[in-house]
Each structure stands twice: as C-alpha cells, then as structure tokens.
Length: 219
Ligand SMILES: N[C@@H](CCC(=O)N[C@@H](CSO)C(=O)NCC(=O)O)C(=O)O
Image 1 (cartoon, rainbow, N blue to C red):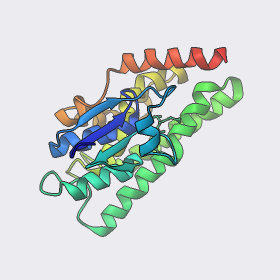
Image 2: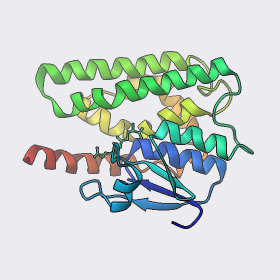
Image 3: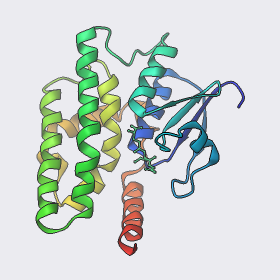
C-alpha cells in the first residue's frame, strides 16, 4: 500500500459519511474505495479482521476502524486546521457522550422500526422519534452542537439527515413536525460544502433501502 490515505466505505453508510465529512473539513486528499458488503474485499477483511465493517481509514498502510475513532484520529493527525473536537476537556467529553448515544440508540431502533410490523413497529417508531427529540433538546438553541462551531457531534449526527426521508417514509411521520429545530440545524449543516458533497441524495438512499428490504424479505 503506497503512503497516503485510503477510505474503505459504502456510499449509503452514515458511518462512512462521518469520515468523508471529516476528511473534507480538513482538506485531506484520499483514495475512495467502494465496498460491496455482500462480497467484502480481501483488503477490508485484512484491514478490519475484528468487525469486518466499513468505514476503515488506511493511513500509510495502517488501518483505523470505527467511524467515531477515525474522526478523532483525523482531527489529531491533521491538527493544523478546522478543529473537530472542542478544546475544553469537559466539552470534548460531552460531544463524545452524545456520539456514543447516537451509536447505541439510532441504528438499532431504526432497524426495529424498519423491519417489524404492528405493535413492535409502533414501539420502535415511538422510541426512534424520542431519540431525535432528545438530540434536538441537546442542541437547544445553538447554531451547532459545538455551540457556534461545527464539530464532532455535528459530524456524528448530520449523516443521518440523508436517511430522514427513508425514516419518515417507513415510519409514516414527518421529522419537520417532530423535530423542527433539528431539521433547521441539518439544513444549516448542509450549507457547508464538506457536508453537502459527502451526503448522498435522500431519494437514492430510499431506493437503496427499498431494494435491501426486498432482499431481506425474500430470505
Ligand atoms: N460502529 C461502526 C458501525 C459501522 C457499520 O455498521 N458498518 C456497516 C455498514 S453501514 O451500516 C457494515 O460495514 N456492515 C457490514 C456487516 O455488518 O457485515 C462505525 O461507527 O464505524
């Protein structure tokens, strides 16, 4: 592997988007390698033998795994511009707490809402919306989660915005009605080129999820 930066990713992954945004914010040039998760490359299996998941950042031949860890690595290595983590230790701890909250809560609750029917689906939907209401409450009236600066927690959450249309369609609700201030924050983040160029079109995400749903339901 030549020196440099390689990202193993898939276009629809909200976790991969986190890394793409961080690399773009720092202006880091890298090689993007799209993975087929149903036929993982030998490189992915070699670089992330533990979880066998994307994203994986390969820097000078060495792999860094787990999106939140990768973003912090990027912030530490390319530390000459656009700081991602707050400088204050307490603020850093809070940002890490809420990204951990997102990783513990959102994906699993989404799957419950997505793949279940009836009461389980309704319970998943209720929990799912409550998670985003909590995240809206955490933002309160700040422009960004890092107060006036776009930072770690903003990067941790904004990728899910490209899935809002999918969440709303499968859950039959409107994020704008449930979390208006959060939607306003998301639109504010989308004004940053590092974000808008890293997130896919929401309808493309939806079509992808419909296709995946068909595969899962046919098994
Ligand atoms: N905690 C990790 C989650 C990565 C992940 O779920 N990656 C998925 C694709 S995105 O949904 C993945 O690689 N799945 C492949 C598999 O589960 O085999 C992170 O933050 O990087």
